[in-house]
Length: 242
Length: 190
Image (cartoon, rainbow over the protein chains, first blue to last red):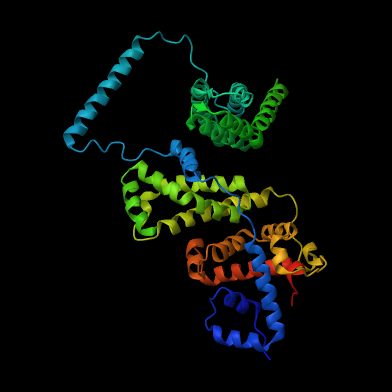
């Protein structure tokens, strides 16, 4: 008797065999193939039990909060519908350029040429210095939030303002790090950015439970630890270069 | 959902961010499930969800409105998740699995407990996770699309941008590897 191949059995299991009837008939008659098919079914049933971590009921809203700041603006100039409006906008733009030029001329000139760090090593050093300072300031805000008292309702709007400013810096440093191929710095800044985004776009008035949750998230994510490690690493890099 | 998507996608294409928000809220959860099953890692899955939606927004102009928005999103997610999985593989320092005869999973004693007990067993879950990790990126992706997402082989091949024969081969290899790895726990191999 010709046995069924494993491929035949896989196709049969998924209902994609060209003709299911002969396979069914063979399985009824052949103990060996039936045993193999049973083993295949049990293995695939076990795979079905693989759990997927639960997401909160407002998961879609959370994802939107994370992606929205990165969406490029579409249809920004949709209000400019007629050629006259475009001409008027062009005139305003040209005026602004001329005004900026004239203002620039009236400002005191720098005494010497500005030195721009052109070599990659100097650029890396500048990035390292800036990121070290930035991480220190970010840690201060996050540590304050992580240690906030959960005994009463907490107003974090001042911290949210600081977080908004940190976010703008974060994007700049992360993109620079990516551009320079520093995956370690870019990776930690990427994680930090997600945490900052959640804080910035979350509620300003936190109940005791929400404070607890925020604190737990900050600890569970390990973001503070990662920031400390990176901070110490970038400082070490600097010390070795001095 | 697809019919409802069409109208919302049309609005999103014309620059309506609120319409895109609706699509994000609607598709994030299934995208996460797909991404987690492919990458096997929560943080990577979150990254895949976020990057997929950003890429989708940037490429909305290229989307053919006659097609299914969900399938299109899955295609973007699958491509990005494959990159993530390849990066994961590079990060792993351990050598690739030896041939199946030396696979430690195969040398496990066969206790043959009842399947209903196995379904609840943490050990089986652990073995399944390990067995899934042993699959190549292409095998795992094709298997997830066929087994969990219920796509037919033709649809899997379209999503992966490969020939149906290649998709079928990947699914077959994946099932074969899983069966061999799990057989000592769930049954007898031929």
